[in-house]
Amino acid sequence: MSTLPLRPGLAGETPYGAPELDVPARLNVNENPYPPSQAVIDDIAEAVRAAAARLNRYPDREFPALREALADYLAVESGVRLPWQQLWAANGSNEVMLHILQAFGGPGRVCLSFTPTYSMYPEYARDTLTEYVALERRQDFTLDVEAVRAAIATHHPAVILLASPNNPTGTALGPEELHAVLDAARGCGPTGHDGAPTDAVVVVDEAYGEFRRPGVPSALELLAGHPHLAVSRTMSKAFGMAGLRLGYLAASRQLIDALRVVRLPYHLSAVSQAAALAALAHRDELMSQVARLRDERDATVAWLREQGHTAVESDANFVLFGPFEDRQAIFESLLERGVLVRVVGPDGYLRVCMGTPSQMEAFRCALTAVTRP
Image 1 (cartoon, rainbow, N blue to C red):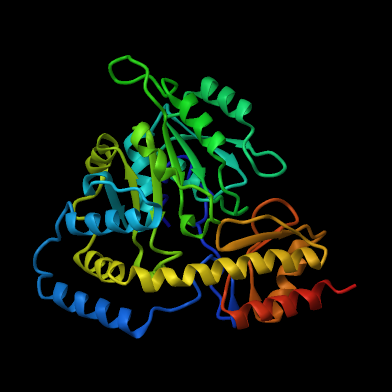
Image 2: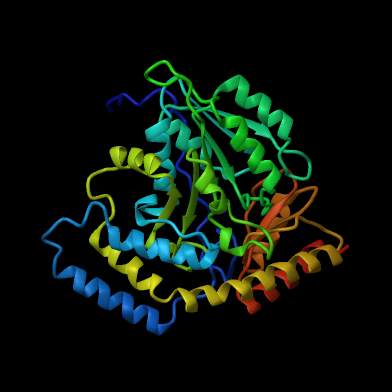
């Protein structure tokens, strides 16, 4: 057997992934539980059929039609109107994040984040040979602003990754926290190629942004005054299009142009572009599910607290709850009853994402059964 020249840092690593099990209530990967309607399916199928007639040609590298449609959607969802040149898209927000680290990270540079948070962030850094530095959040999962300022001044990060709402806690950044990070990042990035100071790129990952409660602002509102800010979104969650793999990002044209340099040629297939455009044409129908899932989330938080559990207030489509002396045993007992949740986050806690009413009833019955004295 030959010995392969595996890159240092990858020895012993395993691929990312959550359990994919066929159970009645699969509530572990924060998917939208509602499949697309027949009208959405038909329009996507027709769009893909039309694209198939041109598959002998490469797709449009710049995909302006899709970027324009995404800009139209954000204008409705958040009230922020952007030109299409300030939007970028890729195969899931994972690839968007990888583009950011490819463009601004690399050897000798630092990516700063705050735990507990999305478990893929250190992998983006690892894959781009960027040093990953993580600070702990406070007990209530907010940021210690003074500690953040000190860390930025010490490490001069190229990229700062902030999930809001945060995964796995569901907590959203407060305006004062985000303003503090953006201000501290000014002039505190790594030294540029010309020897001059740079601004650290602040990425606010709003994968669950559509689920935020009324009155919780989007970071999109701050783009105009902060060219070093980037706001990431996805069609996987609120849109119920996880299988489409379409993530996108809003930022200054200067930042977007940097991502265009590192993307692979024709990285978004013609089929992906066509399917995403067809789905976006049904944005009102697809987004109508969000209010239903918000209500389910709030009811789940209230129910968990009534049962004596700690449930973290959430602006996402999931709830972090616990603590349990042996969370693995609780997880396995729920699974035996056909309910799959996620073992993630602080010790003792589990995360459940919102499902259909029948799936959530199954979750409540199963949790009651396995935690009953």
